[in-house]
Image (cartoon, rainbow, N blue to C red; front, side):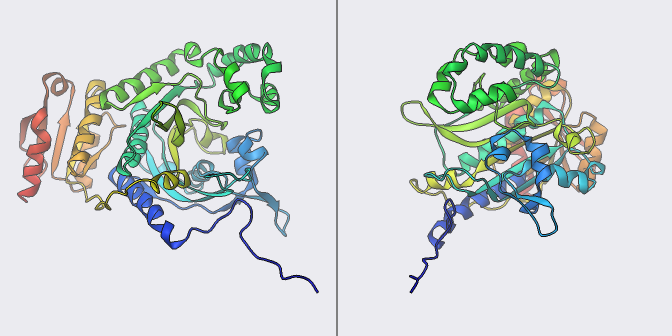
Length: 430
């Protein structure tokens, strides 16, 4: 007589029991609060997609697709896959939904389960959870910094303290091909010292060797050429502005010249937010992302610049379990103030001012990617916002801001150091 089969979860899968749900809920609330404040809208894409979406979008030779993607043929013969990540699905939805007809950028966020056939280990599962946000249709460095700021804010709201941003630029189709040849030449001379996977990567894409976590490859990587020294003029200018924005926001960041992220679609800015241990070593990435200016076009859409990020909820929850949880936060309210800016200096200072309003729990709308004051005032008018703060070159230099009452048309000047306090008083008097 056959013994009764013991039914249990598959390897790499797990139940999220009731006592764990509070942690997942707190992460979700933090993400919802930040994305609502920055005017990102929720989107949900199917768990099951055409496998070609990830083969073409993520990259046929990436580990996420070639080694880890769950793919199979349906009864009808279609090759489908459980999504290993969100970005290609959101890019597909942007194209399929005709979102290029909407005001740009289109800001979207989502969260949910993803699937990769990895070797199960502590904190790493084959069904895992991420939150994700994407801004499509904006080439400005300011959107890069907004996504990085949001990622940082979520972790700070969850009481993570010793975190830092690692940032790099990996160039684009203008400068990256020549750098790949330089990098390949270096690694060919060190081929015997590379792991077997990296010897394969040397033929397919030498940039991926920089993403390898094997100790022997880390030693070889330490002497490799740095792409930041080989950026074209446009990529160099873009990255310089990103760093200027980060400086203005006073975010803790370090340049990591070997940060590349292991997916094919990345261009220009890439980043990861890591937690440091007491000895200064990294405990692994909690949130990461970058710019992907070619993905939408690669999937059959229009030429659309984009920037996004994703955070590993499982890893974040595992760390939260060892710490005291912060109280739930109230959801952001409808904006009563619109921040309009003109010029590069004003853009940089506006990002910081925007954060000061958030810290004071005052909801503010913005349009950092727009340069026309008329366009921004029209946007504020359509949103029914009474108070518009106008921040131009003169205001930035002389440290004041112009307040326009959209109901009466009356304008007044407020010292920059007092604007948050005075706007709080105006809102409370309503």
